Length: 405
Image (cartoon, rainbow, N blue to C red; front, side):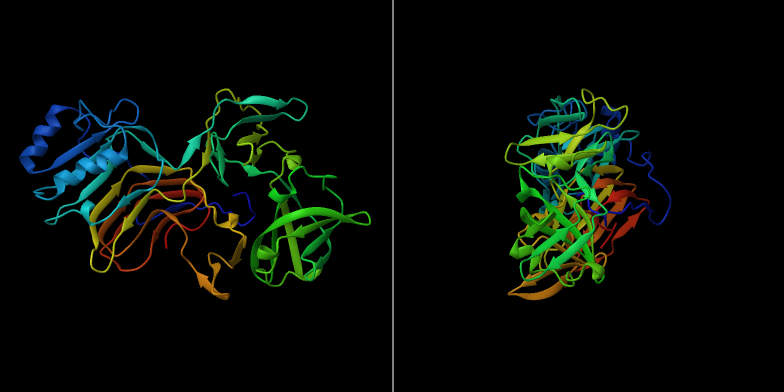
Protein backbone atom coordinates (compact mmCIF):
# COMPACT_ATOMS: atom_id res chain seq x y z
CA UNK A 1 0.00 0.00 0.00
CA UNK A 2 3.05 2.21 0.41
CA UNK A 3 1.93 4.28 3.40
CA UNK A 4 3.97 5.16 6.42
CA UNK A 5 2.23 2.94 8.93
CA UNK A 6 3.18 -0.18 6.99
CA UNK A 7 5.35 -2.17 9.34
CA UNK A 8 7.66 -5.14 9.07
CA UNK A 9 6.51 -7.98 11.28
CA UNK A 10 8.63 -11.00 12.11
CA UNK A 11 6.97 -13.62 14.27
CA UNK A 12 7.81 -17.13 15.26
CA UNK A 13 4.92 -18.44 17.33
CA UNK A 14 5.20 -21.12 19.95
CA UNK A 15 8.40 -22.68 18.68
CA UNK A 16 10.89 -21.66 16.13
CA UNK A 17 11.07 -21.32 12.42
CA UNK A 18 9.44 -22.99 9.47
CA UNK A 19 10.27 -26.64 8.91
CA UNK A 20 9.28 -28.35 5.69
CA UNK A 21 10.16 -31.83 6.88
CA UNK A 22 6.88 -32.67 8.61
CA UNK A 23 4.61 -32.65 5.57
CA UNK A 24 4.47 -36.42 5.56
CA UNK A 25 5.58 -39.06 3.12
CA UNK A 26 3.34 -37.93 0.27
CA UNK A 27 4.26 -37.07 -3.33
CA UNK A 28 6.61 -40.01 -3.81
CA UNK A 29 4.52 -42.54 -5.68
CA UNK A 30 2.68 -45.82 -5.04
CA UNK A 31 4.60 -46.85 -1.92
CA UNK A 32 3.19 -44.09 0.31
CA UNK A 33 -0.26 -44.65 -1.16
CA UNK A 34 -0.22 -48.28 -0.07
CA UNK A 35 0.91 -47.33 3.42
CA UNK A 36 -1.78 -44.70 3.65
CA UNK A 37 -4.48 -47.12 2.54
CA UNK A 38 -3.45 -49.55 5.26
CA UNK A 39 -3.75 -46.82 7.91
CA UNK A 40 -7.08 -45.51 6.65
CA UNK A 41 -5.58 -42.27 5.33
CA UNK A 42 -6.36 -40.88 1.88
CA UNK A 43 -4.91 -38.08 -0.21
CA UNK A 44 -5.29 -35.72 -3.12
CA UNK A 45 -2.21 -34.57 -5.06
CA UNK A 46 -1.84 -31.15 -6.68
CA UNK A 47 0.83 -29.86 -9.05
CA UNK A 48 0.53 -26.26 -10.26
CA UNK A 49 2.98 -26.78 -13.13
CA UNK A 50 2.34 -30.32 -14.38
CA UNK A 51 -1.11 -31.15 -13.05
CA UNK A 52 -4.39 -31.31 -14.93
CA UNK A 53 -7.81 -30.85 -13.36
CA UNK A 54 -9.08 -33.74 -15.49
CA UNK A 55 -6.73 -36.05 -13.57
CA UNK A 56 -7.69 -38.25 -10.64
CA UNK A 57 -5.49 -36.47 -8.10
CA UNK A 58 -3.07 -39.35 -7.56
CA UNK A 59 0.73 -39.00 -7.26
CA UNK A 60 1.16 -39.92 -10.93
CA UNK A 61 -1.87 -37.91 -12.11
CA UNK A 62 -2.14 -34.77 -9.93
CA UNK A 63 -4.71 -32.06 -10.42
CA UNK A 64 -3.62 -28.49 -11.12
CA UNK A 65 -5.77 -26.14 -8.99
CA UNK A 66 -6.69 -25.89 -5.34
CA UNK A 67 -10.35 -25.59 -6.27
CA UNK A 68 -10.32 -28.99 -7.97
CA UNK A 69 -8.34 -30.45 -5.07
CA UNK A 70 -11.05 -29.18 -2.72
CA UNK A 71 -13.74 -30.94 -4.76
CA UNK A 72 -11.87 -34.25 -4.66
CA UNK A 73 -11.12 -33.93 -0.94
CA UNK A 74 -14.82 -33.43 -0.21
CA UNK A 75 -15.50 -36.77 -1.85
CA UNK A 76 -13.16 -38.48 0.61
CA UNK A 77 -14.44 -36.88 3.81
CA UNK A 78 -17.81 -38.46 4.57
CA UNK A 79 -16.53 -41.91 5.55
CA UNK A 80 -13.12 -40.91 6.90
CA UNK A 81 -11.20 -43.59 8.77
CA UNK A 82 -8.01 -41.52 8.78
CA UNK A 83 -6.78 -38.09 7.81
CA UNK A 84 -7.42 -36.72 4.31
CA UNK A 85 -4.32 -34.90 3.09
CA UNK A 86 -4.12 -32.49 0.18
CA UNK A 87 -0.47 -32.62 -0.93
CA UNK A 88 0.79 -29.60 -2.87
CA UNK A 89 3.89 -30.05 -4.98
CA UNK A 90 6.41 -27.24 -4.89
CA UNK A 91 5.59 -24.30 -7.13
CA UNK A 92 3.24 -21.34 -7.40
CA UNK A 93 -0.51 -21.58 -7.03
CA UNK A 94 -2.01 -18.35 -8.40
CA UNK A 95 -5.46 -17.90 -6.90
CA UNK A 96 -8.18 -16.25 -8.96
CA UNK A 97 -10.35 -15.88 -5.85
CA UNK A 98 -10.16 -16.93 -2.19
CA UNK A 99 -10.97 -20.59 -1.57
CA UNK A 100 -14.24 -20.81 0.37
CA UNK A 101 -14.31 -23.61 2.99
CA UNK A 102 -17.41 -24.64 4.95
CA UNK A 103 -18.69 -27.66 6.84
CA UNK A 104 -18.33 -29.79 3.71
CA UNK A 105 -14.56 -29.32 4.07
CA UNK A 106 -14.43 -30.26 7.76
CA UNK A 107 -12.74 -33.41 8.99
CA UNK A 108 -15.01 -36.02 10.53
CA UNK A 109 -14.79 -38.87 13.03
CA UNK A 110 -11.96 -37.08 14.84
CA UNK A 111 -9.70 -36.95 11.76
CA UNK A 112 -8.29 -33.89 9.99
CA UNK A 113 -8.30 -32.54 6.47
CA UNK A 114 -4.71 -31.39 6.01
CA UNK A 115 -3.47 -28.91 3.41
CA UNK A 116 0.31 -29.20 3.17
CA UNK A 117 3.38 -28.94 0.97
CA UNK A 118 5.03 -32.15 -0.11
CA UNK A 119 8.00 -33.19 1.96
CA UNK A 120 11.06 -31.07 1.21
CA UNK A 121 9.14 -28.78 -1.17
CA UNK A 122 7.49 -25.39 -0.84
CA UNK A 123 4.01 -24.76 -2.19
CA UNK A 124 3.66 -21.01 -2.65
CA UNK A 125 0.07 -19.72 -2.66
CA UNK A 126 -0.11 -16.35 -4.40
CA UNK A 127 -2.78 -13.68 -4.03
CA UNK A 128 -1.61 -11.56 -6.94
CA UNK A 129 -0.93 -11.57 -10.66
CA UNK A 130 2.44 -11.98 -12.35
CA UNK A 131 3.34 -8.84 -14.29
CA UNK A 132 5.38 -9.44 -17.44
CA UNK A 133 6.06 -7.74 -20.76
CA UNK A 134 8.15 -4.86 -19.42
CA UNK A 135 9.42 -2.19 -21.82
CA UNK A 136 11.50 0.93 -21.24
CA UNK A 137 9.03 3.82 -21.15
CA UNK A 138 11.30 6.76 -20.28
CA UNK A 139 15.03 6.18 -20.74
CA UNK A 140 16.06 9.44 -19.07
CA UNK A 141 14.21 8.64 -15.84
CA UNK A 142 14.61 4.85 -16.19
CA UNK A 143 10.84 4.31 -15.96
CA UNK A 144 9.60 0.96 -17.23
CA UNK A 145 6.02 -0.03 -18.01
CA UNK A 146 4.01 -3.23 -18.38
CA UNK A 147 0.36 -4.25 -18.84
CA UNK A 148 -1.44 -4.53 -15.50
CA UNK A 149 -3.84 -7.13 -16.95
CA UNK A 150 -6.91 -5.48 -15.47
CA UNK A 151 -5.67 -5.97 -11.90
CA UNK A 152 -6.45 -3.32 -9.28
CA UNK A 153 -4.01 -3.45 -6.40
CA UNK A 154 -2.32 -1.22 -3.87
CA UNK A 155 0.67 -3.49 -3.23
CA UNK A 156 3.36 -4.33 -5.79
CA UNK A 157 6.26 -6.69 -5.21
CA UNK A 158 9.46 -6.98 -7.24
CA UNK A 159 11.98 -9.76 -6.65
CA UNK A 160 10.44 -10.54 -3.28
CA UNK A 161 10.41 -6.97 -1.98
CA UNK A 162 7.55 -4.54 -1.47
CA UNK A 163 7.84 -1.63 -3.88
CA UNK A 164 6.97 1.92 -2.80
CA UNK A 165 4.08 3.84 -4.32
CA UNK A 166 5.37 6.94 -6.08
CA UNK A 167 5.33 9.76 -3.53
CA UNK A 168 6.66 13.06 -2.29
CA UNK A 169 7.57 12.99 1.40
CA UNK A 170 8.29 15.45 4.21
CA UNK A 171 5.79 17.97 2.89
CA UNK A 172 5.06 21.12 4.89
CA UNK A 173 1.53 22.43 5.11
CA UNK A 174 1.17 26.18 4.98
CA UNK A 175 -2.52 26.06 5.82
CA UNK A 176 -5.28 23.48 6.33
CA UNK A 177 -8.75 24.72 5.45
CA UNK A 178 -11.63 22.62 6.76
CA UNK A 179 -14.25 24.83 5.13
CA UNK A 180 -12.90 24.29 1.63
CA UNK A 181 -11.44 20.84 2.36
CA UNK A 182 -8.07 21.90 1.10
CA UNK A 183 -4.41 21.72 2.07
CA UNK A 184 -2.04 24.50 1.04
CA UNK A 185 1.54 23.28 0.72
CA UNK A 186 4.92 24.88 0.37
CA UNK A 187 5.94 24.19 -3.25
CA UNK A 188 9.13 22.29 -2.44
CA UNK A 189 9.02 18.83 -4.02
CA UNK A 190 5.63 19.23 -5.72
CA UNK A 191 5.43 18.97 -9.54
CA UNK A 192 3.91 21.92 -11.36
CA UNK A 193 1.01 19.83 -12.65
CA UNK A 194 -0.51 16.34 -12.60
CA UNK A 195 -2.08 14.58 -15.57
CA UNK A 196 -4.38 12.60 -13.24
CA UNK A 197 -4.83 14.58 -10.01
CA UNK A 198 -7.82 12.38 -9.10
CA UNK A 199 -5.40 9.51 -8.49
CA UNK A 200 -3.53 11.40 -5.77
CA UNK A 201 -3.83 10.53 -2.10
CA UNK A 202 -2.67 12.38 0.98
CA UNK A 203 -1.27 10.42 3.89
CA UNK A 204 -1.74 12.52 7.01
CA UNK A 205 -1.50 12.10 10.75
CA UNK A 206 -3.26 14.02 13.50
CA UNK A 207 -4.25 13.36 17.10
CA UNK A 208 -3.08 9.74 17.18
CA UNK A 209 -4.90 9.03 13.95
CA UNK A 210 -3.64 8.24 10.46
CA UNK A 211 -5.61 9.00 7.32
CA UNK A 212 -5.61 8.29 3.61
CA UNK A 213 -7.44 11.23 2.00
CA UNK A 214 -8.43 11.31 -1.67
CA UNK A 215 -7.59 14.33 -3.80
CA UNK A 216 -10.17 15.68 -6.26
CA UNK A 217 -7.95 18.30 -7.89
CA UNK A 218 -4.80 20.38 -7.63
CA UNK A 219 -4.92 24.16 -8.00
CA UNK A 220 -2.88 27.03 -6.65
CA UNK A 221 -3.22 29.96 -4.30
CA UNK A 222 -0.70 32.65 -5.16
CA UNK A 223 2.53 30.67 -5.58
CA UNK A 224 1.46 27.75 -3.40
CA UNK A 225 0.02 24.42 -4.60
CA UNK A 226 -3.38 23.65 -3.11
CA UNK A 227 -4.71 20.11 -2.81
CA UNK A 228 -8.48 19.97 -3.00
CA UNK A 229 -9.89 16.88 -1.27
CA UNK A 230 -13.05 14.88 -1.80
CA UNK A 231 -15.81 15.62 0.73
CA UNK A 232 -16.29 11.90 1.46
CA UNK A 233 -12.72 11.38 2.63
CA UNK A 234 -12.10 14.85 4.11
CA UNK A 235 -15.23 14.95 6.24
CA UNK A 236 -14.22 11.61 7.71
CA UNK A 237 -11.06 13.06 9.24
CA UNK A 238 -10.74 14.29 12.80
CA UNK A 239 -8.04 16.68 13.92
CA UNK A 240 -6.84 17.82 10.50
CA UNK A 241 -7.04 21.53 11.18
CA UNK A 242 -3.89 23.45 11.98
CA UNK A 243 -0.53 22.74 10.31
CA UNK A 244 1.19 22.50 13.69
CA UNK A 245 -1.45 20.05 14.95
CA UNK A 246 -1.33 17.74 11.95
CA UNK A 247 1.37 16.25 9.78
CA UNK A 248 1.20 15.68 6.04
CA UNK A 249 3.35 12.58 5.72
CA UNK A 250 3.29 12.19 1.95
CA UNK A 251 1.49 12.83 -1.30
CA UNK A 252 1.19 9.58 -3.22
CA UNK A 253 0.16 7.85 -6.40
CA UNK A 254 1.02 9.87 -9.49
CA UNK A 255 3.21 9.23 -12.50
CA UNK A 256 4.88 12.61 -11.97
CA UNK A 257 6.13 11.47 -8.54
CA UNK A 258 8.19 8.61 -9.98
CA UNK A 259 11.67 9.85 -9.14
CA UNK A 260 13.29 7.19 -6.95
CA UNK A 261 14.42 3.60 -7.61
CA UNK A 262 11.88 1.11 -6.26
CA UNK A 263 8.83 3.37 -6.80
CA UNK A 264 5.78 2.40 -8.83
CA UNK A 265 2.50 3.81 -10.10
CA UNK A 266 -0.59 2.11 -11.55
CA UNK A 267 -2.70 3.93 -14.13
CA UNK A 268 -5.94 2.02 -13.71
CA UNK A 269 -7.68 3.49 -16.73
CA UNK A 270 -4.83 2.57 -19.05
CA UNK A 271 -4.25 -0.71 -17.16
CA UNK A 272 -0.54 0.06 -17.14
CA UNK A 273 1.95 -0.19 -14.30
CA UNK A 274 5.09 1.95 -14.16
CA UNK A 275 8.20 1.15 -12.15
CA UNK A 276 11.69 2.53 -11.57
CA UNK A 277 14.02 -0.47 -11.08
CA UNK A 278 16.49 -0.63 -8.27
CA UNK A 279 20.16 -1.02 -9.07
CA UNK A 280 20.84 -4.47 -10.48
CA UNK A 281 17.21 -5.31 -11.31
CA UNK A 282 16.61 -6.67 -14.81
CA UNK A 283 12.99 -6.11 -15.80
CA UNK A 284 13.31 -8.78 -18.46
CA UNK A 285 13.66 -11.42 -15.75
CA UNK A 286 12.27 -9.66 -12.67
CA UNK A 287 9.73 -11.51 -10.53
CA UNK A 288 7.01 -8.83 -10.41
CA UNK A 289 3.64 -9.50 -8.75
CA UNK A 290 0.77 -7.04 -8.32
CA UNK A 291 -1.34 -7.96 -5.28
CA UNK A 292 -5.00 -8.56 -6.12
CA UNK A 293 -6.70 -10.56 -3.34
CA UNK A 294 -7.12 -9.63 0.34
CA UNK A 295 -7.44 -13.27 1.47
CA UNK A 296 -6.76 -16.84 0.39
CA UNK A 297 -8.73 -19.29 2.54
CA UNK A 298 -12.07 -18.29 4.07
CA UNK A 299 -13.40 -20.67 6.69
CA UNK A 300 -17.10 -19.90 6.69
CA UNK A 301 -18.37 -21.34 9.93
CA UNK A 302 -21.64 -20.45 11.67
CA UNK A 303 -23.06 -21.18 15.15
CA UNK A 304 -25.11 -24.04 13.72
CA UNK A 305 -22.45 -25.15 11.21
CA UNK A 306 -18.99 -25.07 12.79
CA UNK A 307 -15.98 -25.63 10.52
CA UNK A 308 -13.63 -28.05 12.24
CA UNK A 309 -10.64 -30.36 12.01
CA UNK A 310 -8.77 -28.57 9.22
CA UNK A 311 -4.99 -28.09 9.25
CA UNK A 312 -2.67 -25.88 7.21
CA UNK A 313 0.93 -27.02 7.40
CA UNK A 314 4.18 -25.96 5.76
CA UNK A 315 2.62 -23.67 3.17
CA UNK A 316 3.87 -20.28 1.98
CA UNK A 317 1.34 -17.46 1.54
CA UNK A 318 2.54 -14.40 -0.39
CA UNK A 319 1.58 -11.27 -2.32
CA UNK A 320 -1.84 -9.93 -1.36
CA UNK A 321 -3.28 -6.42 -1.18
CA UNK A 322 -5.91 -4.48 0.78
CA UNK A 323 -8.27 -2.11 -1.02
CA UNK A 324 -10.04 -0.51 1.96
CA UNK A 325 -8.43 2.88 1.27
CA UNK A 326 -9.94 2.85 -2.23
CA UNK A 327 -13.37 3.44 -0.71
CA UNK A 328 -14.80 6.97 -1.09
CA UNK A 329 -14.14 7.68 2.59
CA UNK A 330 -10.46 6.77 2.23
CA UNK A 331 -8.97 5.20 5.35
CA UNK A 332 -9.05 6.19 9.01
CA UNK A 333 -6.77 4.35 11.42
CA UNK A 334 -7.35 5.18 15.06
CA UNK A 335 -4.11 3.96 16.53
CA UNK A 336 -2.93 0.53 15.48
CA UNK A 337 -4.52 -1.73 14.42
CA UNK A 338 -8.05 -0.27 14.70
CA UNK A 339 -9.87 0.74 11.54
CA UNK A 340 -12.68 3.23 11.97
CA UNK A 341 -15.82 2.54 9.95
CA UNK A 342 -19.29 4.01 9.97
CA UNK A 343 -22.87 2.79 10.03
CA UNK A 344 -25.68 5.27 9.48
CA UNK A 345 -23.29 8.13 10.01
CA UNK A 346 -22.21 6.91 13.45
CA UNK A 347 -18.54 6.23 13.97
CA UNK A 348 -17.52 2.84 15.22
CA UNK A 349 -14.31 0.98 15.75
CA UNK A 350 -13.56 -2.28 14.00
CA UNK A 351 -10.66 -4.73 14.12
CA UNK A 352 -12.10 -6.74 11.27
CA UNK A 353 -9.02 -6.74 9.04
CA UNK A 354 -8.93 -9.14 6.12
CA UNK A 355 -6.52 -12.04 6.53
CA UNK A 356 -4.91 -14.75 4.43
CA UNK A 357 -6.70 -17.28 6.64
CA UNK A 358 -9.99 -15.86 7.84
CA UNK A 359 -12.95 -17.39 9.62
CA UNK A 360 -15.46 -17.61 12.42
CA UNK A 361 -16.98 -20.48 14.41
CA UNK A 362 -14.02 -22.80 14.14
CA UNK A 363 -13.01 -25.84 16.17
CA UNK A 364 -9.78 -27.85 16.04
CA UNK A 365 -8.06 -25.72 13.42
CA UNK A 366 -4.28 -26.01 13.10
CA UNK A 367 -1.87 -23.58 11.43
CA UNK A 368 1.66 -24.87 11.73
CA UNK A 369 5.00 -24.29 10.04
CA UNK A 370 3.64 -21.79 7.49
CA UNK A 371 5.23 -18.68 6.01
CA UNK A 372 3.25 -15.45 5.69
CA UNK A 373 5.29 -12.96 3.66
CA UNK A 374 4.69 -9.78 1.67
CA UNK A 375 1.01 -9.38 2.50
CA UNK A 376 -1.20 -6.34 2.01
CA UNK A 377 -3.53 -7.84 4.63
CA UNK A 378 -3.05 -9.68 7.91
CA UNK A 379 -1.91 -13.27 8.20
CA UNK A 380 -4.71 -14.82 10.27
CA UNK A 381 -8.04 -13.22 11.10
CA UNK A 382 -10.01 -15.59 13.32
CA UNK A 383 -12.97 -13.65 14.67
CA UNK A 384 -15.83 -15.21 16.64
CA UNK A 385 -16.48 -18.64 18.13
CA UNK A 386 -12.92 -19.99 17.99
CA UNK A 387 -11.90 -22.95 20.15
CA UNK A 388 -9.36 -25.78 20.31
CA UNK A 389 -7.20 -24.02 17.72
CA UNK A 390 -3.42 -24.40 17.47
CA UNK A 391 -1.14 -21.84 15.79
CA UNK A 392 2.51 -22.75 16.15
CA UNK A 393 5.92 -22.47 14.51
CA UNK A 394 4.87 -20.03 11.79
CA UNK A 395 6.87 -17.13 10.41
CA UNK A 396 5.47 -13.80 9.23
CA UNK A 397 7.31 -10.94 7.59
CA UNK A 398 6.24 -7.69 5.89
CA UNK A 399 2.49 -7.36 6.40
CA UNK A 400 -0.09 -4.60 6.31
CA UNK A 401 -1.54 -5.48 9.72
CA UNK A 402 -0.73 -7.84 12.56
CA UNK A 403 -0.08 -11.58 12.47
CA UNK A 404 -3.20 -12.73 14.26
CA UNK A 405 -6.57 -11.39 15.38
